[in-house]
Length: 259
Image (cartoon, rainbow, N blue to C red; front, side, top):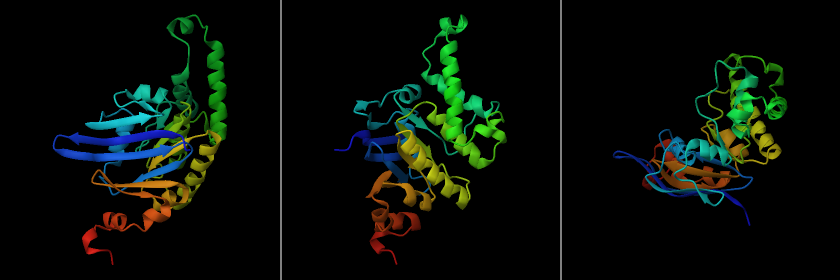
């Protein structure tokens, strides 16, 4: 039996009179790569914001590894093993590549103000710096570790943002449009990179993405939402032939059919 990592139980998010997510339920199991797709404005990022504690759902529950985390803060969610990247890259622009990742590593530190003041945390700090360098080697950024993060080419900035998420030692990695702004070659390389880190770090991956070649190439299952409501779920083959999905993307009335 598959181990459930994330369960969304009838989530609804209202902003005044606007229903951004409407009665959304889904399950993600350990080791899967699951995609959440839908037209612009469908409610995908709002769903991510509820999972990561940015928003508290108007109704419903977020259950992580069997634990109700609906009302938890973002930092608490991260410490429970959830990491996230964003559609618009959010690196620390005044820091080097190395320091961007090291800063994320500090989430897991055990030292406190007392031990830091008296330099009793030197062993832990040394370990974190070694782990940061090793992580940069794994993601292919060790040669640019001393460069300013925002000086990197776009594709490497995306990779750095994922590396920074990995530094928090997640079990569930949420990727919000990781291929945004990438050309086809970069997108293909990103797909291989996501599959590699999933295996190497024993991850479960949940991603929002508009690049259908990437979604269809790496996903085990796909959920589709439109106007905040789920309209389809299944394997890539099942989803791409679903009339409701075709109608949502092409703007065709489902009752009229798709020619």
